[in-house]
Image (cartoon, rainbow, N blue to C red):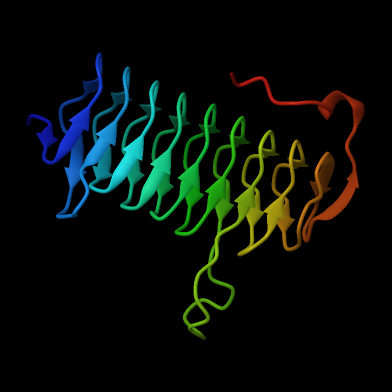
Length: 196
């Protein structure tokens, strides 16, 4: 089966594998993809998505409408970005990450495999609106961590693997445990990520 291309504005040197769908759905705005993108088989990118240069996916990635993604972003296999989300430059979302609607991810951010971000404080119990987390520039989220709705992970902060973040994590600090508690950032974790 060949790739499906609908309303798409594509930069130079893009590769879209067979069985990938780009520009899915009927939207007023086309899918816009910068130079040098690689979209692998099984991935679906909706219409009304804007992606910068150097974008790459693993297999079976989903990027929903209303999403804006910066330059040099990696979206790992089976990761879901559920729309109305903003992602900065030099971001690495590893395998099986879930990014819900109305999430903001800054630049130079790492999100480890299996991390789950949430946006509904009382799922199916109330209709209080959706608010995803905010992950500020330079932050790192460990494997299988969970971020609850509306929390902010501050600049250069580090969330340990398996942590459940229920409150904001200040800049340059470490969140660890269930529920996560904030600690001083150990010396080996100080400084910015080296994704760029």
